[in-house]
Image (cartoon, helix red, strand yellow):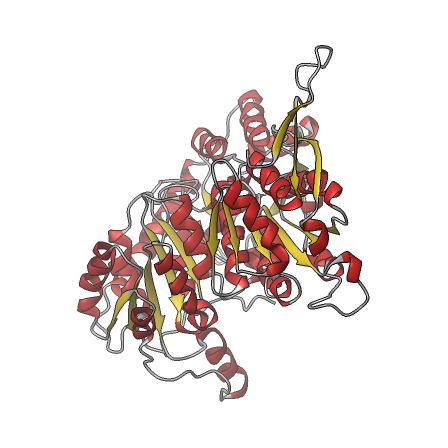
Length: 574
């Protein structure tokens, strides 16, 4: 546990599952003890006196808890958010009072949008000086309340055990997300005691069996169904059940977010590369574990023209979520259900087994596989492009063959990372990190730190736009100080590419969209103790990547790309 004293509070007449231990110590020790009981291994932070007791709690714990200090609080919070995604245990960020907390707001908002389990503990001006104007005195929970599941002050040391337990339980329960608590500085140094809370274990709520049966009947009647798997399939630990359902049902599938890899890249039922044809030509779309937002056309599918030129009817839409509040309220749904996603997938499969004649979707699957093959053939030319300046796709043509099956790929950028979504198909679940629907830049270095800690034997590849790099590149210093090798690949087009082309389309010109040309960002990495190089010849991308993977240090491959080679997109997110 820690230097916090462990006390026996058991009794012979207690039930078998009753709490049998109590703990005492200062509030920082108690908070660390609760975090460890919930599975936390790392405390991400940037030093601040308001939270010193948390550091003491980590250092004096037995064994000590890893303290990882960063150069900007946003990185600590993004690292905790990514830890929650990767490990499915709430990540922990500890941010000092005032600007330390507000610097973490974007990462907390990203966690709320993405359903990432994390707990943020904030410092707070001392209670015995409240209202007097002490340093960084700010009532923080009201700021965080709209972007977190729970935001509250633990006013006394006596509140810390139960308050921290409540925070971790809420963060890790469906629908997952961020929780914020702060503790007054004087109370953080004060001592308390109480029962050691036992983390709750178990699955989500049972789904309504009648709703599951209704969806199974819709599937049985469909001729061109499509399944969409999103982040919550991974977060709910339903990846095995999902793949089991896909393969047993024979249903063509598209993945997004951390749903990527649930159906391995190259699988005959993975039709993400034929996304437009699949969603446009479907008669039933079943979306599981992701919102019906701008990424999915707000839940409107079907209606595309077939070979005879006739438009298909709009598709029926089914939405499956891990909790009732995540079911779409704006889309026209044929059916919906919420609850434990493993139970939903297994229930749907059992329902299909009950129908008189199992549906045969083989012709539809073959049609989509043909579209996948055509898209793959079209992509091949871009992936091998010899263009000067370099086409961004060529980077992926060199990178993808070098990725191991267990690689963790992180996207932090706009246009450049959009190409990654098109060309990178993970072969295992839990190997893809992107900002999710909030679209926040600057998350990359924090996510890379988290990934290297969570997957110490895996490749960790951070894909950076040159614009995104400006938010967090200084935290290469953190990678170096803590001995965390990461391969960083930058698409450097010297512009805010996601904004430049749309503005030109709207106005015929662009402003505030250009960056300094061909900036030597790799020299920044070198100055911070890492290594790197600039690449201007497409034939040198592969050798540069090989050097990066072999280096054993944080290494930036800074590839100068063509600003005119913008990602072709159908939506601007509105």
